[in-house]
Length: 455
Image (tube, rainbow, N blue to C red):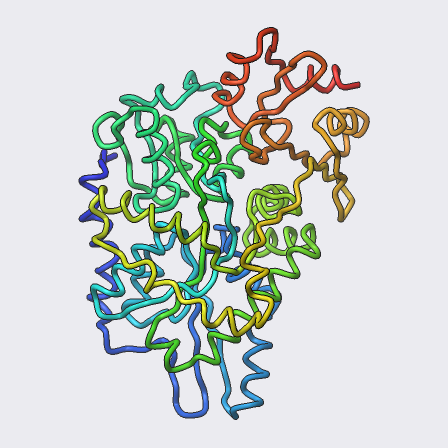
């Protein structure tokens, strides 16, 4: 298996994006139009589940198709939607600049590459909405194997680390390592791998850690195949996924863009109103466990779903440019010209300003029992533990928030600390250790012991 540094990955990442463009050429157009029938091609990432309101859930609900049928009744055209599923954002960008995908969803770092490649190849794109976000960056996580001696980022020196170069999670890895005083190009051996390949490499022992985006870390932890080493929420920097549209398509078919955003808003409302049902729908469509989907997309999940292009997210996107440029994955990116909120403003009307300012997100520790289509919420971790102790045999999943970062994690995978009368959960050993250093008398204890103590 080849070791790839950030320096060496740049030409490979660029080549991966450009090959499909070279093969298909620039004269094609995904939105085939014979005068009466318009075909719209949507690129999405089914397993990147904080894009579901522009992908998996949206497709399951049929919201976009309904909006287009209504549009067809107004303009006399027939609209056909083609859904194309990808593992990461890079191939979606390649297909967009080749004119083969009209609308795509991807993470913040891939969005910047999308903007840069589009401009470079004279096939510009624009960012028109957000799907899911986390203001602290907790959608990305670095995991290692259960039982691994690795406890902190500094333990990664000289180790093999799998990551998808140019992805949002790779940006988390690079930033986290630099903050820890580790050179991401020289002090680790980075392997540029697709998420599924990296997950397999972690299991086989060919890599020591894996840095990935939603939902891979949660999935591997839920399956007992990984434990969290570093919580992206410790960075305190927003991360998000969004929707990008080809300029040429948006200019030619603005009604379709408006229909897509109306459908996305509908899917967002559905997820917020019926989070358990939405998790089950996404699980059925993707093959992911519903418990993992709910970890991220639940009522108090890691992702906040809101289409609006919030200033804090755009400001974070501008900071991301420097990381990608340092890795030689892109040149300058004019973020302000890439962001286009005109369609959302039309969709929201006078309510856009209020929606733009809102970052509200419900927070609660939750338990999901087998045979139930709802969850039970608790005011604190101790109350959750008492409930789990009584219903232990019927618990489907229990979710708690890290006591310092607020990052949601599975209760049985968390690191528990007893501090006086309090029982506190932490997503990683590192955040638990930081607590212990500043709280004399605090001690770690296993999950079973925490359950017994909470009785």
